Amino acid sequence: MARLDGKVAIITGGASGMGESHTRLFVKEGAKVVFTDIQVDLGKKIEEELGENALFLEHDVANASQWEEVVKKTEEKFGPVNVLVNNAGISGAMVPIDEFTEEDYEKVYGINQKSVYYGMKYAIPSMKKSDAGSIVNISSLAGIVGQKGGLAYTGTKFAVRGMTKVAAAELGEFNIRANSVHPGVIETQMVKAAAEQYESVANDLKALREGTPLKRGAEPIEVSNLVLFLASDESSYINGEEIVIDGGSNAIS
Image (cartoon, rainbow, N blue to C red):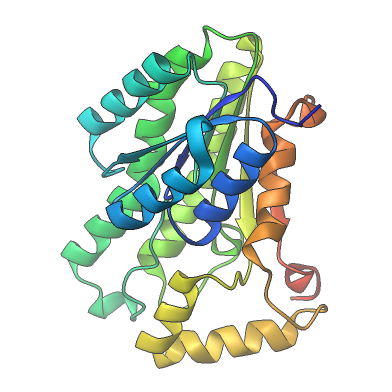
């Protein structure tokens, strides 16, 4: 028996990076998955590869009405939602606080934090129709410790950590769990692009890799295996936790 048999999942940012890895693993483990992204060509290609148990939807995660539509289409296609993975996120500009613009801040806030609020708000009524549910909010190691130049990114990732604890406290009586995942350096295209754009990020990434006891960043599948565990009934008594997956760098910092 696959580990997510009978589960219906929504995964945001599911067409690339960690999100793509989550999507592919969830389908492999028996889930029916609605995955969303703004990268339409990539999403449709993955949908075709994965077959009838995957549905791609174009989706701006910072748009409330689009969230309503995603949940509605999920129920129409597969039934009530059992698992929500709020994975979509951006790093935004990496500059000192006094150089950060309001426009940059609002963009990061909308995608990294407001989207988590919308995701939970609109998915929870659907999850309450099921016997159990699991919300997995992807935060960051920057939601545990500060990051120079990352005012908006760090702020939103700390917020996701707190929002997850509120959800865990409120939803336990409905047998819905909520946990946050805090990756360190993950070798995704977003990370590589940020390193190419900002010298400070490249230097920080190099230092983080070298400072990690395992001396490397993680592959996306290593995070997906954790997300899979939290989505499955194997983690049925884990609720309200922030789980760091960083190769041990936070243990020695």
